[in-house]
Every structure is written in structure tokens, then in C-alpha cells.
Amino acid sequence: MVIRLARSTDPDTSHQGARDVEYRAGSQKARLLEAYRLSSTPLTDEEAAGMAGLTGIGYWKRCSDLRNEGKIRDTGKRQMGTNGTPVMLCEAI
Image 1 (cartoon, rainbow, N blue to C red):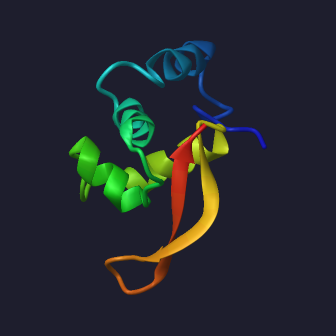
Image 2: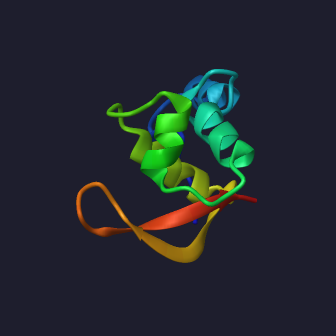
């Protein structure tokens, strides 16, 4: 799977800039990854967002990015989410 950080029509500077800021300290992805790393148990995306102080601001996309990039993984376990449906539990790799 290819993760696109910028549109294919964007100039090379946009592609380089996207790579440079990807895990900058304080970014959403960095904060979420730190939450997964600090937890002694697997977390739902919502729990990780709560620990990172990112509730309600699109954290689910950043968690999906972390899974796609191989930074966190689905443990195969499920837990009832706050919306009443089962959600995956993930952990840092």
C-alpha cells in the first residue's frame, strides 16, 4: 500500500514538506503514537485520542495512518465503543 502525503500533481516541495512534518513533536500522529507507546494495555483509537488530548478533532484518520504505516497494530481484540459498536484495540509496534 502506498501512503500519499501530497497529491501527485503537487510540486516536489510539497511532497518533501509532507514527509518532514509527519512526526514533528506535538503533531497529532506523534501525540497518538506516544499514547499507544505509554499504555500498558491495548487502546481503542478513542482512548488513545483522550490520552493525547485530541478528542473530537479527526484523530481517527491519524490512527488509521499509524496502522497503515505499521506504527500501531490491531490486536484482534474488540471492545464496545462509546457509539455502541465494537471497536478494535491497538498497540504500538
